[in-house]
Amino acid sequence: MQQHHRGEVVWITGASAGMGRALALEYARRGADVAVSARRVDRLAEVVKEIEALGRRGLAVACDVTRDEDVARAVEEVLAHFGRIDVAIANAGFGVIGKLEQLSDADLRRQFDTNVFGAMSTARHALPALRRTKGRLALVSSVAALLASPGSGAYTASKFALRGLGLTLAQELYAAGVSCTLLNPGFVATEIGQVDNVGRFDGSRRDKRPLKLMWTAEAAARVMADAIDRRKREYTFTAHGKFGAWLGQHMPGLVHLIMRRGKSAMVES
Image (cartoon, rainbow, N blue to C red; front, top):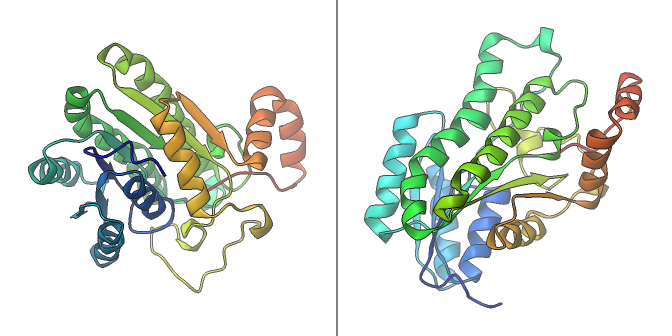
């Protein structure tokens, strides 16, 4: 693989597992030094070991993206250690599942604090460094940003909001030479299906998403990194994800008919 990111620094939130971890290793293979952030520091240490085994420098920075001061401190630590940020990926997120009347106000706020305000905080604090390097910002959204489905109103609303943020930032940052790539994954094999509504991981929890439609996190990381490198404004995958997104955008009436009858839909992770 061409190491065209040699000399560059990538910072990724939500990088202790799943797509975040896979992205960290993908960028290390492409020659970048990688800083990884998440709440689970023990797991971050393992990711750093994997990065270093690929011959690149790694840095673990504990960060809860729902705490703005954590995000600001994380950026300071990355800059103090590496001196620059060329790519910042707001990947931290999870799903609050359930019909609206079944959810508490705390559930709803927790969903937006992580998926929306966490991404906003990540972007806001990383942007001064990205402006200096004319770098790349990426927001990891979901096919759910384009296709609503019953029982996922909080999650879907958070991803719709994140899509609005990403498309707006792409316009605002263009003149500064900074790109913003909005990533909309379909089904990807991650731990999101085993995380409950308060953000707790439970390995015994059954992931109800269709296994046959899932991409591996490694395959997802490759196409995500390609889209970020090419400074795409928006990139949707997998094949089922693209089809679901197309339906959501171009045939909303049909989607409404299918969903109200309780049919399953191709939403993500």
